[in-house]
Length: 270
Image (cartoon, rainbow, N blue to C red; front, side, top):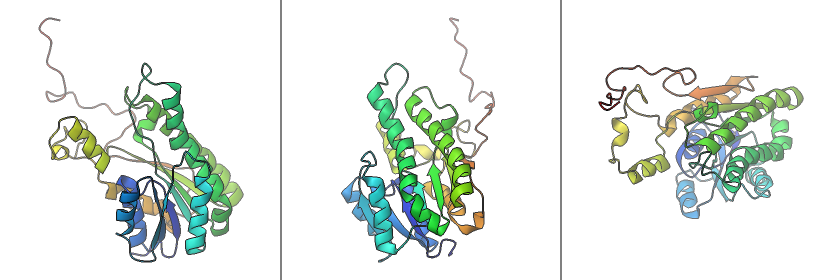
């Protein structure tokens, strides 16, 4: 398994969840990885899972505009070059038209769209040298989103447009590819914690209603990582500006079956 042999890859938000799974899969495929996160304890624990000399750790807030150049400099200093970046880090949280203020909305846009843009811009000189790749990690919520995920969904929609725009522009100008994966519902550590806080049992993910998960379970981070390798590897050739929805059912236009398990019982008082 050497599909990424000798490549140097930055993965933001890679001390937990999808980012961690992508970083670990990159290393298995032969890459050197710059790990990134906010929490020193999680960062050190994650770094310890990598073989010596295959990963370095940078702890920094992507809202700080000096972070992006530092990540690129760390990659070049540690490993001599930069072949790819994975913009995975994201601000996640609820909000709707009634309870979302300007500060929260801007934070979502800053971390989920502006920060990826700034990292791509900072990395472009190095990526141009290696004819490298950018992979943005979005969300199927980009197409509309749930009512209580309005600012998050809008930020992922903006990221999707950024991917398509730069996927065309940078391929023409620099031969740098830009693509995106939109994961569906994924069993990350944070998702498991959220559901436990909602009062669900520890094994809630093993019996998800099939209207939401036809397979009876949701996706695992490792399944997103497997898809990521294709876009980071040379085997994807000149493919750029593409969005891949990694979900177990068609997301756009889906009309869930209206059987007894999904249709609410009639209200006798109606």
